[in-house]
Length: 159
Length: 118
Image (tube, rainbow over all chains, first blue to last red; front, side, top):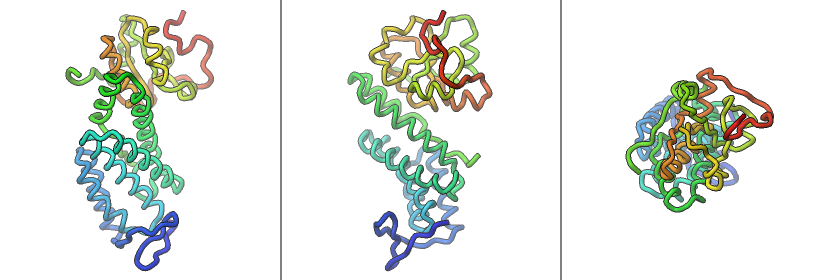
């Protein structure tokens, strides 16, 4: 693992200072499991809330990227439920970006989720949203609604 | 929208392709993805070209497939709005390959991916 430097009780990541509230591995894993379960049952706000302490609780840079990817993914679907397409697109982009960065550290980046499959699933969703937004108005609206209510990208275990 | 979109899994899609109804497997991924891996006999109309080429689609049942099911969902909704007999293939080529259904890869042969071959 690559541990981020801690300065004044905060993490330095990508040149920026981020919150760091250390949590034991077991507690982080429990939060991750609960967050994934919430995501799978479509409780995206709850997933976001459960994953955040796990993210703030580790110095492992790859794990932070992976968890932040999941947090942004959950946030995207909070926006989808609320009918905010710009919020969806922005958070999906952030999620894919984080997941791909975490992938550089290994297929699961320590969280046991198939990040390669997830990055693919997010990319696919983004491509669909991007192309459909250029369609005639009625078709674009239908597509946006279909994509917002379709099952979200899968959080599968590392194969 | 009237109710949920019709959707089938890859096994049902494969069955319908061989049932004599003239069903077309419509792959809406981009050309480089089609070259990587595809279902033999699939017709290629990338989602990015679809609105300009919708008039080319034969009046036959269409099974819409993509990588993992997002683009095909949007395209199925679009085609049904136009009154076409379109059905989404859930799980896309990822599920197709995982199910052990036939695939081809490499640069497509002339005619491969055409809407009305032979």
